[in-house]
Amino acid sequence: MKRKIPGIQLARRISLGVILAVVTVMTVLHQLLKDIPSIDAICPFGGIETLYKFAAGGELVKRIEPSNIVMLALVVIIGIVLSRFFCGWICAFGALQGIFGSLGRKVFKKRFTVPQKLDSVLRWFKYVVLVAIVAGSWITGTLIIRPYDPWAAYGHLSAGLGAVWAEFAIGFIILVLSLLLSMLYERAFCKYVCPLGAFNAILSRIPLFRIRREASTCISCSKCDRACPMNIDVMKPDAVNSAECIACFECVTTCPTKKGTLKTFLAGKPVRMGIIALIGLGLYVGTLGIGYLSGLVRFTPIPLSQKAIEDGLMIEDIKGSSTWGEVAESFGVEPERLYRKAGVDGSKVPPETKLKDTGALIGVKDFEADTVRIALAEILGVPYAGEGGKLEPKPAETNATEPVATEAPAPAAVTAPAAEPAPAAKPAPAASNAALKAPADFALEGTMTIKDTASALGWTPAQVIAKLGLPADIPQDKPLRDMKDGYGYTMPVLKTRILE
Image (cartoon, rainbow, N blue to C red; front, side, top):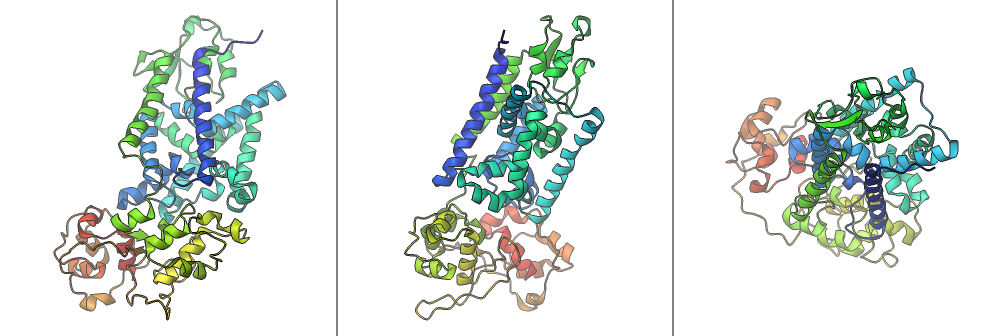
């Protein structure tokens, strides 16, 4: 007789299935429509990768959006209150592994386990991955994990295997291996590799949520151990204190005693599983929904046209989902000139074409949005090193039939032609300070003040102000990031100026 699925497990499967379905549909629509979030923008781990840069200067790592920060905050809150509830109830990649794990049990008629000694060593690997990714992202300011990310590879499958292989070859291999291994060893990626799982495991050390065992009613049948997808020892200890527990409740619902041998506790008090599930899902969905409706959560980039008016454009703001017409209009260049500089036949590519779709129209398999960024930077004379960071900036392109400004825009930033400059106080005179140059390894951060910068460089505050091109009356003891709106600058521009 087939065992009936307990209600709480049915609810968990529905939760995971719905989230996986929504994410999958969004990844498909992202390839077809404009303003649909990318797989990067809906992953809370992106908040960890950009946290340092965001805290230092209010900036985000490329391809990361404010939504990542909010989702990270939600994961932290849920992690503190309910341990790794996110992994067991919300994570779409965990759901995908669960599907393959279920398939594996049907195919092989058993669940395999890694030898205990090897398993205990391998469990530490995900912490190494976490540290390496976070450190690399914070140092380089880029998503260094992206080419190796199996979840990013999954999110781009709708673009075709050719596109996935070109950008995520290693990530795709890891994806396939993770799913195949999950058929043998359930949630193999979660146990041994997942950096977000490692982050949640660290949060789970705060003992607000626990599953406890009543020894007097336990019959030592080990069914709880066999049911646990994370292979935790449930039968022997008085409480499940393992950082690997994903709050799936499989052990509780499998216990045959029906005497409350395994119970769920929150803050030291017994709480029903259904209530815990409602708290976890409510925290995640409710807070995210309120944030989105109030405008605090933004899953998609600010349109280029809006940035041109409000925030000053950056070459790096151009995305694969940007259209040719949008780029040309926002940066104030003729579309024909942009096509020509990028080496694209404009007659084959309408202005409403997304940059990432250009290759299919002109027969170039590996056409990248960075080609357009480089072309635009050369037209405007804006320094831009390209995604590989190896290109040398070129002077502004001259055109006999088209006047070009003799002064290039501020490094790496362009302001829309139609935008009116805000009135500002008279800048401090540069004089001999123009010869000053910060060391190449100097990093100007938004948390630093004028005085901090002067002290770090051995300059006077007046020299720092002049070097940065700021008004002479700018406060010297306030963090630079707190004054950027009032004085009309951006941190990327200041970081470039200090090194010139």
